[in-house]
Every structure is written in C-alpha cells, then in structure tokens.
Image (cartoon, rainbow, N blue to C red; front, side, top):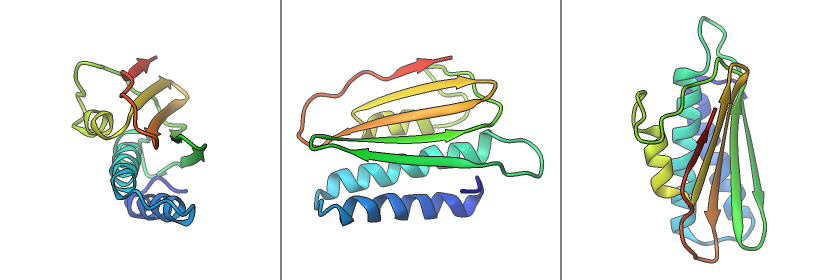
Length: 131
C-alpha cells in the first residue's frame, strides 16, 4: 500500500480484522498487534521516503499455532538503528513493549521490521537491531 497517513489506520484495521477472522479472541494480542502495526507503518510514513512520492509499505502476517510474525517493510532510504534510544521518537520502544520479539534490518535499500507475538504465553525475546 502507499506509505501515506491513511495507510496507518487501514493497516491497523486490516491486521486486527485478519487476526479476528482466524477465530482468535485474544483481545490483548489484538491490541498489541494494533499498536505495533500503527507504530511501524507510522514510522515508514514519517521517515522512509523523501520528496513528494510517498513510496510503499508492505505488510505481511504469518500465523502458526503458537505465534504471529508481523513484518513491515519499505524500500526507503533506511535508518540508523539505536537499540538504546530512538532518535526519531517512541515508535520502536513502544513496539518493543508490546511485541515478544523485534528485529530491525535496515540498509540504503529499505528497512524490514519483524515483530513476534506469542500466542501460548512465554517469555519475551530481546530485540535485535541490525544494519
């Protein structure tokens, strides 16, 4: 989808709808997915692309019996990842609080943010930031 302000709301509603259509009634996970995808797509809208062309944001969600992996990717200019702080705002730290694991891979050809949400409980994994 286009990486514009309308995509934040659309992405959030589509991911939550997808989760509920799978007959999942875990409101805590649904809320975490909504927060995470909103922050991730919002970061793409604000930071990935320069100029008048909003670029694209791609969202992929995968479910197995114990977890959801939610990927948000762009082909923008990339970012410098700082695990101890986020110079651009609170997006990554917020995602880190609601997801059970976060991986960011960024280079000059884009950024891919992968988020893990455990469905069967369990402990949180540490976040991994890579360049």
